[in-house]
Amino acid sequence: MSVRVLIVDDQALVRGGFRTILDSEPGIEVVGEAADGLAAIAAVAELDPDVVCMDVQMPGLDGLAATRRIVAERGERPAVLVLTTFNREDYLFEALEAGASGFLLKNSSPEQLIDAVQVVARGDALLSPDVTRAVIAAARTRIVASGSPERPFASSRNAPVAHGAGSALATLTDREREVLELLAEGRSNAEIAQRLWVGEATVKTHVSKVLQKLALRDRVHAVVYAYEHGVVRPGA
Image (cartoon, rainbow, N blue to C red; front, side):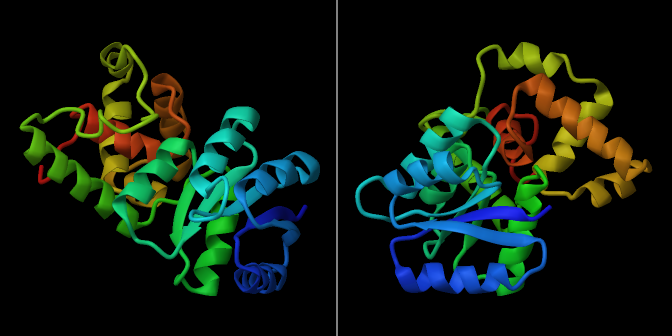
C-alpha cells in the first residue's frame, strides 16, 4: 500500500517541488495540499493521510499550532513531519512537544525527504544526529543557566513529561534503562543492538516497552525525557 502524504506550505512553488519529489517515489502518493494550518486540519479530516509534511511559518494558524491540534484530535496517525528553513532550537522543541514525529530542514536532499516520509510512516521517529546534538546542546545550556542538573526543559510549553516521572522510571528494568540511555545518545536500533550484543528485534521490543512505561509518543520524546529527568547528562 502507498504512503498517503499531505503537503502543507504557504508557498505554491514549495508544495509543487515536494509533490514532484515524493510522487516520483514508488510507494508514496501525495493525496493533497494545504496552504495554512486551518486548511491542513480540514484536509487531514477529509483525506486521512498517513503523513503530513508541515511547514512552520504560515499565515493564520501556523504549523506548530496545527500539529498540536492534529495530534490531539487524531493521535498517532497521521504522523507529522515538520519541514522548515529555520534551524532554530525553539522551533525544534516546539515541534517535538506539539507531537511531531520528525523535524527536517528544507535544504535537505530529495533522498532525505523521501527517507523521512518513509521513516515516520512506519511509526518510527526521525531523530537525526543533528537533531540529537541540538537536544543535547540545549540541555547543556539550560543546565548551566539554571544550575540544576535535572529537568532542563521543564519550562517548555506542553513538554512531554508526565506526572510521577520518578515512579515511572522505577518501573524500567536495568536493560530498559540502558536502552533509554543509548536512545538519548541518538543511537539507532542497529547501534544499540551492537552495543548490547543482542538482536535488533530484541532492541525494538525494549524500545517499545520503554515508550509504553514512560507514556512517551516516540523515541524523539524519549531523548527529551531522558535529559529532563537526569537519566543522562550532557557531557557524561
